[in-house]
Length: 69
Image 1 (spheres, helix red, strand yellow):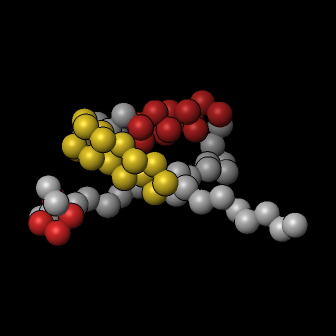
Image 2 (cartoon, rainbow, N blue to C red):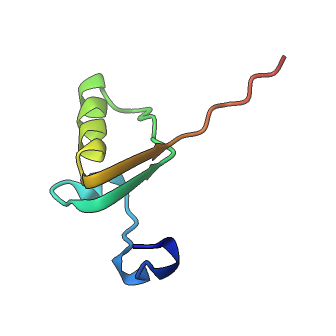
Image 3 (tube, rainbow, N blue to C red):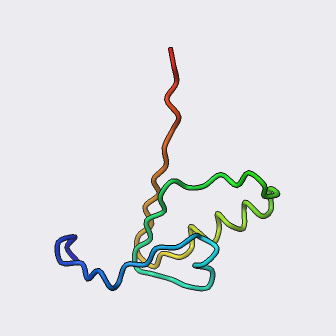
């Protein structure tokens, strides 16, 4: 699909945990979350779920705090 012709009805938004067991051609993972209250194993499982939902393309975007000089 071209971005201009992408059918809006095919775009899903959700938290990572809600995509468990589901797949899509393209996944955009935005602001990959740091799990404050999660154990290291829970965090690994969530990251695994997030990164294995895409059939064709996975794009991960995150922000980096600005470092003051």
